[in-house]
Image (cartoon, rainbow, N blue to C red):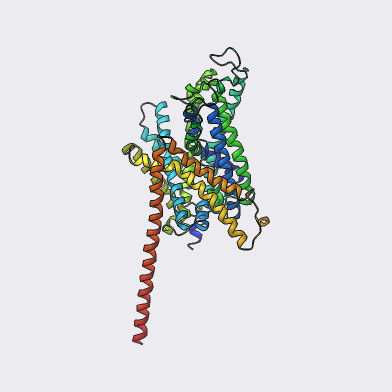
Length: 477
């Protein structure tokens, strides 16, 4: 009976998997923060940072592909870290990933409320935030199929908006559509007019963490593995197509922005997307982008709640937290884990209002680095998995999906992820993230091993008590 009440359902198809991974990645980072990145690293520096980030992500996803196809489990990379690195690391990976999405939920519901407040000035922001919380909760609570269809719809709006933006921008770059302030085609003059790296090459390194955080969400492919139809076919397909599309969307958008707007003005005060559309004379550019950003926020919140819920379910399913959190209803939804994750998002939202400079700052700092820690765990788990696979008598040809160029790819993925963490030491504004992250990771390990020690002591006491009772019964006979 217990086994049935903790079982998830394989209802996701290839198109759902693709849009969920895109939905988790394409958010406010691209639509709002990309201008700041261009301003910090310059046009060429930003393009280079995104290219390096895309390479890191692709290497990590190739590692995750082999693991997910060989062992398609929900919450996959936490389970792999547990099996192939150690239970303490598995526990830490799950907690960090849960925290990443829970903190994001708080900020996303606040941002959605603020957008609606701009449209309806007399309405309170908190009311819209609560309304969107209910919508996203119901999207996740009804069924995994309903969640997947909702995410497909939200992500489709974002994807169409980015494609139209790149097409219109490309036409403007070559002078086919007139651009305000230009009498001839601007071409790519703005990319190089102040030199290749106007802020210095250091800007490429200091923006790497921002870029990595922008690409975070692609690993959702692994989280969905336990609820995906035919994972051996659909997971590799999603990995390859998702990365191609991400490079096209992110780098394509950055090139268009940088070519049409001087890098010093690239969205420092408002979205670079709005600046470009206004330059093209697009009517209601601000309102259109607000709608797109709203769908991006809701899409990221939808994926985020799904990811954090499945992490809690996986922790409970692996007996690392009480098993009640792994219970599912008749539709295969872990409703207790879902409710707890939503409450986590609510607490993150409250901390952003009540303790923005203390608790919330620490949470955001840890969440920003957490995904890179997860990527390192995926790469190292793949190295250990392949060793174990061969040691147990299997051959590489038996694997349905193989990480190419093993062990170069996983070691490169691990090293580049680690390097992107180390490089933030050189950026004073991001340095505190490292100082918060290291103690938090240590705390996770301490909590896990303390909990295990307490459990072991209790088992010893129970065993000793059982032995005493057994001896007493034998003596009485």
